[in-house]
Image (cartoon, rainbow, N blue to C red; front, side, top):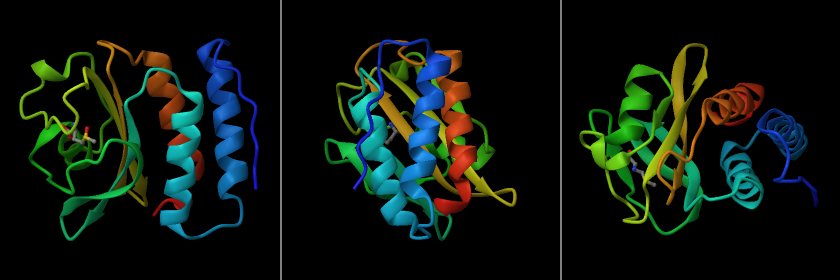
Amino acid sequence: MHEFSISQNQPPEQLYDDLISAACALTDGESDSIANMANISALIWQFLPDLNWAGFYRMIDGELVLGPFQGKSACIRIALDTGVCGAAASTNQVQRVADVHAFPGHIACDADSRSELVVPIGIDGRVTAVLDLDSPLPDRFSAEDEAGMTKLVAAIANRLG
Ligand code: SME
């Protein structure tokens, strides 16, 4: 069992350093990607403020399939040409969306979502999953959040796929 004490009231760079250390410790020596996704979504949910959904979609047979998450129940399958998650997976580019209502094809799993950050998870240049964060606040995710989450995913990518 792990217990982390991470202050939410610190500059983003330090918050992400703490989150990355915790993510590495939580997944250390564990090769089961579902177990690791479950713990990472719980970690992010506990310590990153103002989220209404945090979790993973896994690339299976050319579509995204719901993985471990925290938040309300969500859509199970997402085609790669649909929504924010599909855009991240098909382009292998982070999607940071300040206003989800302005994003063509956005899928409203939770009507409360106003902004979204989706980070593709790549192993050997192949997207194996995406990390999806939703917030009820408009423009919740900053460039620091994008950089921090990208670093976190890169640090443990081979334990998530
Ligand atoms: N909003 C996402 C769908 C997933 S839910 O937010 C959990 C999208 O447009 O891809």
